[in-house]
Image (cartoon, rainbow, N blue to C red; front, side, top):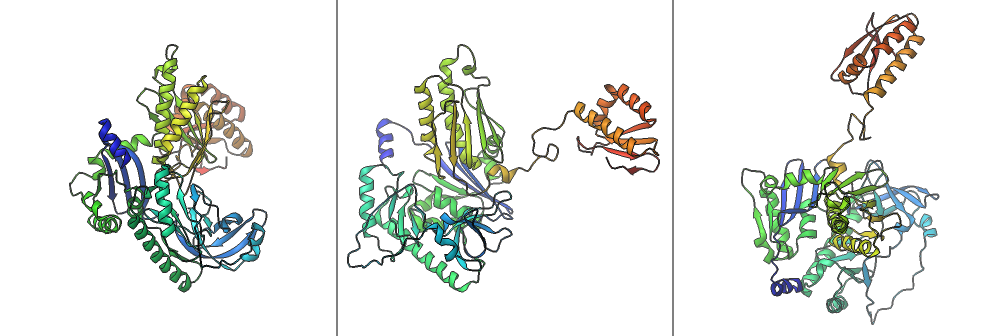
Length: 525
């Protein structure tokens, strides 16, 4: 509301914010556009059920004291990983704890549980209720916690923690004071806690209370499922992409929500009416022949956003490489003046633009874990701090938790971003069958040398064979004929053999076959 009043007096026009939801048989996609520019992107595929946030009734399979962790069978292919510290009531970050008076209640003195008590509390074979904090990634199973939390539109309910708090992202002192008063009046069963999310800022008390009532009812249903279902089993699923998109991204600044499927549209309206009947008018059913994402220019933006190189308006570009251990993002000057002798004044604006785009790319690609950022070198500490602050400011809109360190003496920024599931890139792409994920293949020269060594080895191992047929890719054959003919003749003379080469266009560039020409038998290289 304050921002709206500011914009009104300053004459600023409000950006057009649109949420697009495309439903296909095997994939659901959500795009959030700000003045037509892609700001958020999520996808969910039918064959890949996202279990992050889901609650399971599991059974402890084994305990690993060296790892200070246990493995829990939750009914999936891979057992879940439960660290000792995740089995304790976790200290909630990003909130200010609010002390509440509980007059008339005698609170029981409970023994403080430590990590050393966990093996005795959860021996192998025991049942445990856990929530997935990080879905399976690569070869790793899901990461789980016993500290259950149920996120609503404006609040989060903690059934096993009696902490009450307010998101630290709500910074206005007057608003925090108002929300504290609301928290003091909210009644929940003893032992439960409430945290007001960032989306709760400016909301009326009745909306927060309605959210709490919904979550309490949901928890009662989950408790019933926990009692009735055997371990291991799923007792609560977080909801599909449409549900989470509306819950997490439908704010007052969103002008319209467009969905291209009738069934999803009806579910959408039901969910929105439970949040705010006033927002129902924002929902639109898209019925045109042209696909929704194509109509709004999203397909092209997705293609550009997931390239290894991302162009910036200044002429510079980002190079983004995801590895097993970390993600490296390099800011290259490209055609920007920042790389020229007279372009020193352009370095700061280019880095500021790069910081904004990096924050956007992290959200779009859902990149998590350790991230290293290499900006264009800046000598001025003032400029370095400006880029650091710009990055933090742009990351403030991110739903995932981030932690950023200032620019190091080596000119790098180290940061982490909460990872709850595979990045979008790992969902969309697979390792290249040619380079096998290396990003490069061997040169024809290298392969020619490998083939010649292999022929020598096979000839020595098979002295009775005097005629060989070598099957190679057309590119390698061209190199052998044009450049290495003399070496092959010398090879024939040295081993008293004859060589015949045959191209196979279907053959992998790095694969070759050496065969006995008399009976077409492939020989072991």
